[in-house]
Structure formats: C-alpha cells, structure tokens
Image 1 (tube, protein in one colour):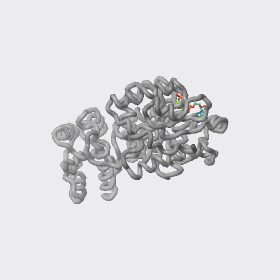
Image 2 (image 1 turned 90 degrees about the vertical axis):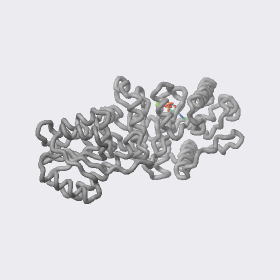
Image 3 (image 1 turned 30 degrees about the vertical axis):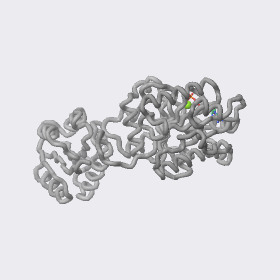
Image 4 (image 1 turned 180 degrees about the vertical axis):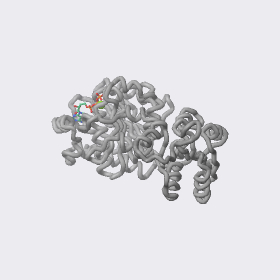
Length: 402
Ligand SMILES: Nc1ncnc2c1ncn2[C@@H]1O[C@H](COP(=O)(O)OP(=O)(O)OP(=O)(O)O)[C@@H](O)[C@H]1O
Ligand SMILES: [Mg+2]
C-alpha cells in the first residue's frame, strides 16, 4: 500500500488568503504548496502528485474554470480532486464549476471547519476512485442477472430480486438496467425515464453521492434505479469504459447492485461479467436456452473467470415441458441452485401494473422463492466467503419452494 498522500495544491492569487489556507490545512497535517496563477498550477500538477487542488475561480490570466477543464483533459490529472473556491455564491457559478469537472465548491467567506471537512471527504472519496489505487475499500455485492436468450425472465427476476434484497437486508440496493437498447426495468417498476444512464455518462468530471442521488431514480420500495437510455441511439454511446465506471461507481455507493443484462455476448456484457461478484444465470427448461447456457459456462471458463460465481436459476421450472432439473444439471454439468415457479397470471399482472410481486404478494410461492435467492446473496455478503456451493452437483441445495 502506498503512503497516504497529504499534498494539497492551493491556487489563489490573493496572497493573504492563500497564506490563510496554507495555515488552516497545515494545522490539519496537510503538506501545502501555494501557486498564484493557473499556468504555474498546471505545471506543478505535472511534476507532483497532489491529493487535491484547491482552485480559486478568479485568477489572473487563465481563470479557475479553464484550469479545471485543462486538468480534466489531461490523463495525469483527470482524477485529481478539485475543490473550487469563489466569492460568487450563485447557482449558475456552481453549475459552471461542476460543468468543467470540479468535484465540490466552497464560497468565500468560508468556515475553516467547512473547508477542512470538504477537503477530507473529497480526498477520502477519490482514494476509492483512482484506478489502480491499492487502498482497500468496502465494495457492494454486484449481481449480474444474465440469460442467454431474450424473454427467459431476467427483468422479472432482477426487479423482484432487487426489491427482495432491500426488504430482507434494509441495505442500500441499486438496480442497473444494462439492456441499453431495449431495457424495460422502468416498465416493470412503473418508473418514468426522466434520468437515465445517458445523463450519467454525459456528466463531466467525477461522479459523487450527489450525482448518484440525482441520476438514480428512487422506487417506493427503497431501492434506487439507474434506467437504460430512453432512445436506442443513446444506448449506442455507452462504451465498455462507461460500463466499468458505472459498475464501480454503484458498487462504491450501494451494498447490493443488481444488473439486468442484455442477452448478448458482446464486449459490454463481458465487462459486466468481469466486474460482477455474482452472476445469476436465468434459464428456462427449453432445449435452446439450455444449450446456450452450457456454451456460456464453457465460455466463462475459457475466459478465465470463476465458474464458481455463476449460479443458475431455473425459471418457470414447473412449466410442463418434460425436462427435469436433474436432466438439466446433467446437460449443463452445473448445479441448478434455484428454481422459480411459473407464477402465471399474478406475475404477468404485476409486471403489467409495474409493481413487483414480492411487494404485492410476498406470500406467493414465486415471491418466497425470490426472497430465498435474496437471502442467499445476503448471506454471502455477510459471510464474505467464497462460494463452495457449486463444487458438486450431488451436494445440491434444496431449491426454494421445492
Ligand atoms: N416465473 C415467471 N412466472 C410467470 N411469468 C413470468 C415468469 N418469468 C417471466 N415471466 C413473464 O415472461 C415475460 C418475459 O419476462 P422478462 O421480461 O422478465 O424476460 P427477459 O429475459 O427480461 O426478456 P428480454 O430478453 O426481452 O429483456 C414477462 O411477461 C414476464 O411477466
Ligand atoms: Mg428484460
């Protein structure tokens, strides 16, 4: 682990104020360097690794906004926490600062305590963001709900599971609709797509708690939902890099992150798999999905990912199609961990109404089966033990509701 970085760059042409800032921060144990103009400040950030830059807006020559934008454009400083300092207190200035990538904003005159609090919290937060940083952080459990074919019940299970995780654990739960083209989590939960993944990826600079609050839509169950872009062409713009940033961001802010995946083996879903702690593979008792799931498991192994993190849920297991769970396990050479019944009309009606069945009818067998899946992941999260459940197909856990 690297030494904690306590270096702060104060950029202010007002020498008296710069001196005051130095004194306050030095007293708090920071190592403060003062710069009086933008060009000099940028040069210094190229030479020294600072934990934070405190940037005055009104600077001679290059103003603070320009300095901020330039720092964000440079790969060396793109993640440098920036706290803007200004005499102006109106909202337009605040927005202008955020638009060029500032992380936070402090208005003069300020309380030393407020300054120190903001500096400390920005640094703490950034140490979770900087790629390659070795600081250990609490990460939420990321559960990707995947299916090798459309229509197997991914969204129905993902939405009910997210709500169930919240009901059972009362922890922070986020649901990400990663079907960036035809995502319908909003429909399943009756949420309007007022803000989506698209707003998040278009947001310049670092994402913080405030951004999470703004972009993830609150659902009455207490979960927060990041919807897929409203228009498919906006979905096109979500890159693998964005996905990495989004999933890591959500995992930092939520205890559980449920991801409703697209039925695709493209690079974007590959990235989701890689970043997930668990993959819940939805399969229906039909020959097509079974064959695809078998290929998927081979593929996971070939890519070097742990097959152990994949759990299979057999959805609509009681649809009378003549393929039993044992036969399915033989075909897949993998244990079926969960079974979810075909909930018939109540499930379809709940999807149509936009209210998950675990809310409407928690006693329904479909709901109790989902709640048991939630308990399984809550259990994993609290024990933090690696999965041992999948090693042997003979050592099968009794499927929920069986
Ligand atoms: N266990 C179940 N019992 C009853 N109906 C179900 C069940 N699972 C899914 N369905 C129904 O099947 C339909 C398809 O489900 P869902 O939208 O969840 O599938 P999906 O895998 O997300 O599809 P897509 O690939 O199109 O996103 C929905 O109408 C849903 O209500
Ligand atoms: Mg779906």
